[in-house]
Amino acid sequence: MHHNAWRAILAALADDRAREVYARTVLAQQADEALSALPAKKSQRIMESLTTAGLVIATPEGLAAVPDAFARALASAGTSGRREGVERFLEDGRLVGMPARTADRRAVLEHLAARVLGVTETLSEAEINTRLADVTDDVAGLRRAFVDHALVVRTADGSAYSRT
Image 1 (spheres, helix red, strand yellow):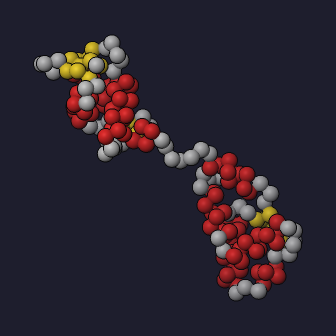
Image 2: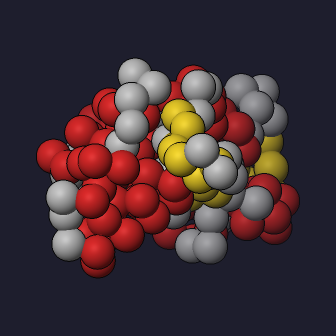
Image 3: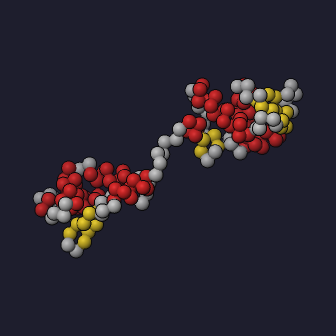
């Protein structure tokens, strides 16, 4: 089941008539009466939406409720798609955008500086560039941001970098 299966369920049950048909089906009552009172196209759309959402299946006897439809939808939804903290600005560990808020920017830079450069390490410009390339497409910009935010110290000649 797709991680957005719950959306199809909500969309199907947003319609009053579809909810009535689904309720009758869950209660093992005949849904045919509710469906036959509707225009053929509306009845067909309701059947399709409930079936596509995985709420019911068509059987020779009529509609049958899928007993674990909600449990499966919840299980497939997994954890929240909303990321928090510095992860909001990273995708697969790579920086996808520099935060506009100062506090967020500082947190992202601290996180990346710790990943790229150990506290006691000193790296040449080529070495730090290689490591930065693993986390960003803008190597020079990120390196400059580290220095500007006093997370990394650059030697006067720019040949070596170390954490502060």
